[in-house]
Length: 215
Length: 228
Image (cartoon, rainbow over all chains, first blue to last red; front, side, top):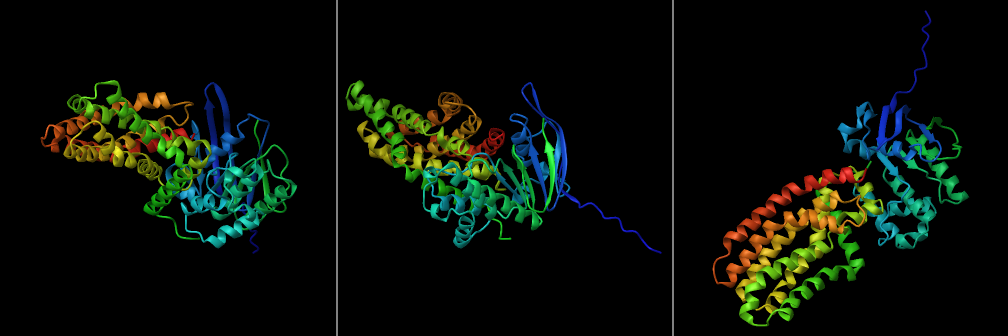
């Protein structure tokens, strides 16, 4: 007898369930939900003010939803706390760098707070984003695009499996934008997950792209 | 995957970072100290320079000046990191927020409170305080300024999202600091009179243990709300 094996959908790693969030009188997130499996990208789009950043912050655990929950590997992120943060790399709109510290000092501190890292790895990450020449420059003297590249270098060094990126392409030149898309593609190929908010299109080579349009 | 950074190693990293940042801007370091010295020298100038009279007001002047100059730098304790997004990154690092706040508070005290304790004998001398009492005052201020930093961390965490929060912060922290002022000034007063100041000093120590163990939890909870 021939047994027909059904191709099973990949197990979702990240699940958001019916998220509701109010900001004063404004109902920002109106029952948002999605499933994301390893190697998948969730592209969050929508006009300004529809709650893209808010959704990203809720999933990252920086804001609490009034209703609904986010689960990571089947467990609510609220209750597993630091276990979830270990797997999470979040790049906000703001690069999150200390202006008085050099790019290298910024990266060394941010990454070492999570796990040990060698100086050579920091150099490699800076080179991967073409900002090796900024290593010894205080972050306040860098342009917005350079700061963003350094924030992305921090993301690579964090060894996180879930990337949450808020408008990662703003302030970047054409080469920089292509580089970021390539990094995301490689991250997905390696079995990582990514959640990206942008206005525009996300042309990612390979990888499954799910779309979530907020209105 | 590399090994996770432990809590103590994380705290050491954060303290090292904050000290490094503080010494990149040395002018800001000195301001509260100069404020402390100026305020304490204003009193001999405005009141009579009679040593006996100065000695009477010395405990109050020293402690009030120390309290106010500690408040000066308090606003920057968490706000600077909240504004450039680094606090958010630290919260997401997986390290306990309670440790992050406690480490930042200790670093803040090392650059603000400790130097004040060290120069306090200078201010005390100008007010005619006896050598024995100078020692007791420094001892009291050592515990008092650290207690105040921990108390202040709760206020700083609660006002992360408030613009120009320094006045609100003072209103939150000063009433809570009253026991410090009472016991601290009393210790100096007793020492000037040549009596034992052990009682008030012990109470200052108790206040320090109380705030150092509880304040980071309150401040940590407030930071979680503040980054939202």
